Image 1: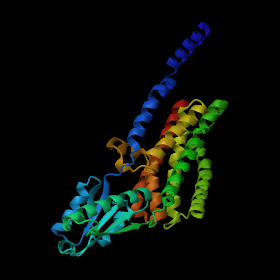
Image 2: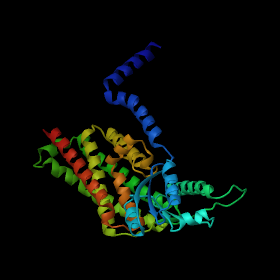
Image 3: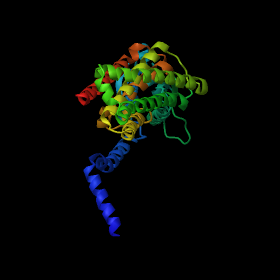
Length: 368
């Protein structure tokens, strides 16, 4: 018993001296609880709604108010047929409610008017849920214009139309997310082990003595991994197209540009982690933590960002996979041009420059 207690006291002292282990044991479980508790939300709210009201009567305004007051939809724009494409391509709206002319008169005279609901189908799960919300609201609004009668069909008809993914195939939603997910993890982990490997082997001193600055060293470390990772991503994309019927409706040049910017940022993040870690084990664990959870939880891959709490929505702006997923789905599913996701590419470029600069500065401090 005394031997066991002695070993236990020694281990407690070691843990108390190792702040990294102590923080891992105390902070990480609480962090995961907060992250999962807030981000794992299957309720879809604050869906961006645009309205094409061609009737402009009291009845049409009542229908629009029913959507807004439901708590599921946020009215962000009033559009016409010409402006719908641009809003959908840019992901500014996910639903467009089209109210035809004479809607109010037909409802008042029991002539069964129909409204059209256009849905952005790049996320099949969200589109299916939102379609259910819209049909429920329209059925409820329809009850105002017809007398109560058993088994009477709704007076107002619904004509749903899903853009980009008419069959609501979940594969077309999952494959782009998997591309971003796999790419982020492999790229970050591969470079996270590169510099720390030099430290463990003792060759970092030789590198420091060479006529080489930190920026050139970081760029040289990134280049081979970039070439290999780019070939790997292209292979993944072709696999998704061949095996899962993933369409390619946009420009291959824009796709390669988006992939390249995302890869440079992911590789730079791995290099920054490698400059801060002392062992390959720590670098590997840190790389997984920095790539796996943010890409899976906070990029919009699985859970809609609009349904997250405001502070987590702010955090997602620092997640490169958020921008890459928007660009990837815009190119492959929508065939959109640069004007639809230019901001996402600019954000990816800014992230890449920032992490490469941080890695270079960190390495320069170590070499002094």
